[in-house]
Image (cartoon, rainbow, N blue to C red):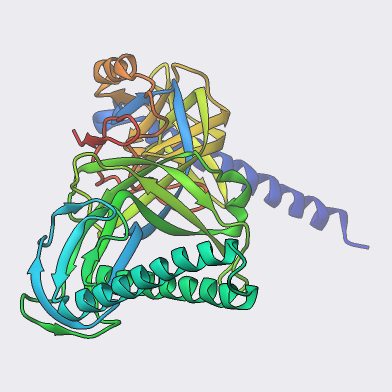
Length: 406
């Protein structure tokens, strides 16, 4: 057992060490609280920009890429051979179904039709005389039946000759735009040779491969926006025309066909663009700029300014798109969230809002769009990733019309 004097000596050393450490902390704290020449330090306000939490409409979207295709395409093929004598249309012209496109030489076909017509008239006259004899019982039924068969044969021969003659006139099988002329005047063509191509651009369709997880969210009739590379800044409005009922097992996607009517005739088959399909819309919901969100370990939060101080609040995020995010829980309308300067602040920091008046003015000027999320040609969604802030803001337009970017 240790001696009493040694035991008390150890306790005394321990108590002195604790008191010394406390004194050092108090002196350090006092020095920290003092500035130059012993005067108290002034806490610096950190400049930040904020946005007000506002109630707006926001939509969930699927984004994909697709090339435009004509809904109907016809390759006009010659059904008989011959030399082209006339060409009635040129590329780019509108044609109606049944319109004459070209005419071939038809001497042989006209002569064949004339021969068939003469043979038919002969048999018809014979039939008329034989009918009178048959009614008077002067010929047998076998002779009369044979004559009926000859008449039907000659009618068929006449129809074939007329059909062959009609093949020398090349006509449009569908209405649309003549997109290709593959022959010239005087060319010798063969049966089965392609002469023209006709595209029906009304409407144009875009075929988009959509992941199977979105199958229940996309239905025929939903609004679609498309931004084509050939005309930057112009958004074309269409609708979902058809939805494939099957999923491709190799890719895990199903096809969605969007239809675009373009009265201005500026869209063309083959143009490439980005497609947005509005899958759902939430009206009168809390919305903040997406840049205000902080994400850490899969959880979202924002910095809120209240009384000149910063508070970090956890939030639950809903739809995201058009550079905005829906807030389901954690904020109230009118709260100020920091959009610029988050990296310089922490919980309790003293801040100075440099755009307070502008934030209020912007919040008051926000109007709910007439077409949900019409200005988000390249917005991110919960399924497709991040937004593209470089994309133009686009005014909504009625279906079948275009909208110009601001």
